[in-house]
Length: 264
Image (cartoon, rainbow, N blue to C red; front, side, top):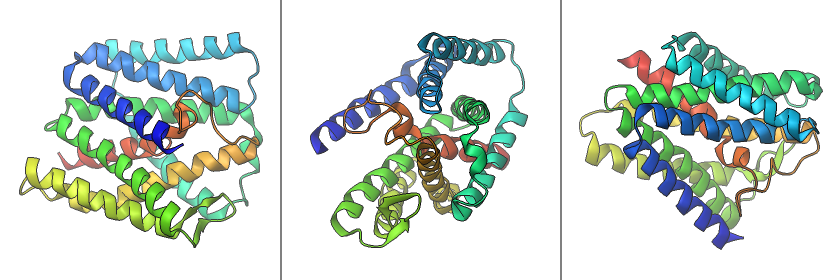
């Protein structure tokens, strides 16, 4: 399990790096929407949309709508802030679980909100890339989510004893969270030190963004529990589905865009 997980992570990092650095804006946006469209496909399957043709039609509508907004130059700022508010509400849902979570069995609502959050994260990535020092910050955010995931996985496996959210995901531990935070401090700190010396914004944002990272992971677990699923799919060896891999990236990008764009 470890070797496929590491190989998958390596090729994902290679693909993300190539896309951020090499692709022109329109092609970059298209790739982002296709990736999140695939995540939508997994989401629709997870919440019970059994027809493959219907899922494909919904994904097609999602991708076309997202690309159209980019091509027409529409202002997506309200969407970014709306998604940020939704993620803030997710903290409450995770803390209060299973209370006030019965609505999660409404597959239409969950599918719609999930699509909105994925679109918001997609536009966040595009907006960050186009901002001042955007490529650095995009790398920084991806390094943060990868560090939290890696630290949580390795430290949690080795030292994990105290469950972080027993009712949601018994496998996640407090030790894993501390390990993820430690990994992110080291790797994001090094990135900031060498490429953005004198800029302390990343240090201020690190702990809040780690919290968003964790809530994204736990929120997907809440949805999977509501529909009796273990993974969102099986497309990524060692990780499960694409949604399982980017569940923490989605809120981090949304929150990161709001924090970074507000600071400029």
